[in-house]
Length: 203
Image (cartoon, rainbow, N blue to C red; front, top):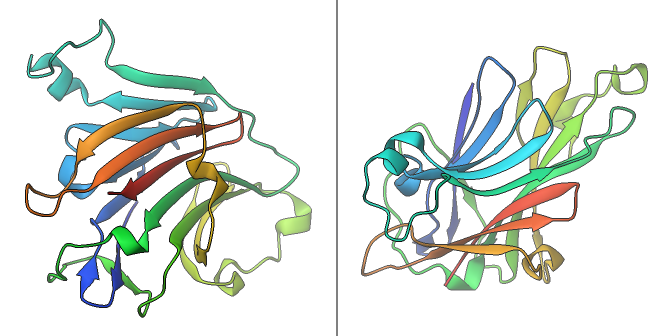
């Protein structure tokens, strides 16, 4: 189960992002250009991992590499009695400089010249009676839905916010360039308490 998206604002666009879930119900997130190098994940064990891919870590191409490929590990509390945001992807719209390019098998979200920060929220919905009749597609700005083997769901929905508090966090990992030398963008991974984590695309 894979979902891909990118954000367009006037003549500029973000990186292409990939979100997928494996057969173990582990959820993975990565910008396309560096997905083979590192990714974020939320596992069925309720652990967040920010990690280099095993192949890249074993390649010996990482300067000053630690003994482990994991940049961050955090145990989280995923509620089973209510909906909960478990991940954010935040894209600062005024930082977009790369020109729009053709994309295949990728949902393009047009922000129509807005300022602020595009925020994609990944919302975990437990498989309990009070949500049994909830139609995911009625969620405002609904994008996609993953259905887990447990019957729980992860709904993707977006908004544009003037200020995003998740950017201001003490646990940040700068990951570097995700496009090319001419249109450099940074991605920062953030731990947000014990309940959510985020990727931020910015200058």
